[in-house]
Length: 317
Image 1 (tube, rainbow, N blue to C red):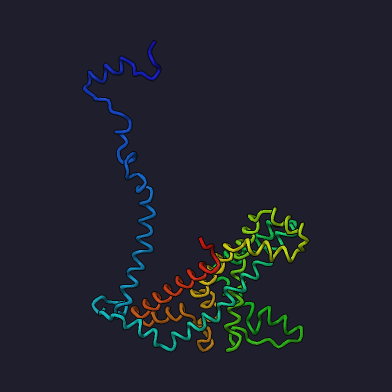
Image 2 (tube, rainbow, N blue to C red; image 1 turned 60 degrees about the horizontal axis):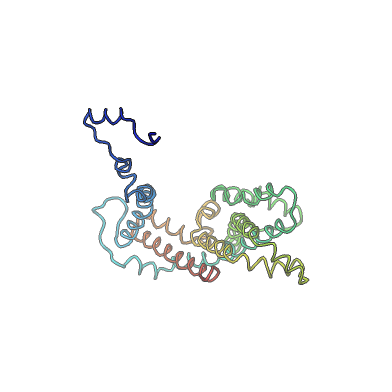
């Protein structure tokens, strides 16, 4: 009896008559079955990373070592470390860094608190309509920063803004929030906190849902109330989520630009000029090498502080 997998005699005879040699299927696969196959799958991502990440980074570092007006390559000249030493001795550069530091409590700590509170409420109370509640809290984070800035600038307008009009009806005399030398930077910080707390809410809520319910039951058996459960079980279980939230918020605080550009444009009197906005102004002044050096310093500082936060709040493994 002939095996079902055996080739038909007629097929073998036809191949021999035509002089065609049958090859195993594995030999016909070419690169698809070779050791290069995994790298072929990685090639598109590698090309995208090279074109849009590696090449711009190398180009920025190269420009930071040159004097160039951004127009003709013939005007470029090697500057060495001059642009970096200029940045580190420039008073306006350090002033913009100080403004970023002042925004850290608003962009890093406050959104984490504002996101943690509703996440704990939703997780513990089990409110009706929770999906709609989640979407509403997350909505500010997915809105473009320019749109957020324009809307809040309209709301805080001292003449026809909704917030000032409401406060005046209540008997208060509100300041010109975005035009006041004292209130401009805190106001921008509060706008940034409002825009970022939705991300913190979603991350914390996802982290709470992975905490084992056995831990809560054990805490209740020991007589723990809601607050004690929160501090003894919930917060320790959110260690990784806290590291992610703080590192992302820190990056947003150091690279803050779009909201400030749309609300104050660095004013009044450069009271809200941050590093990113100062860098853009330097580029507009055709000091490309100096602006590239500021970009490199900002990137290195952001990376170092983010790694520090991840080391402090992340896992030790």
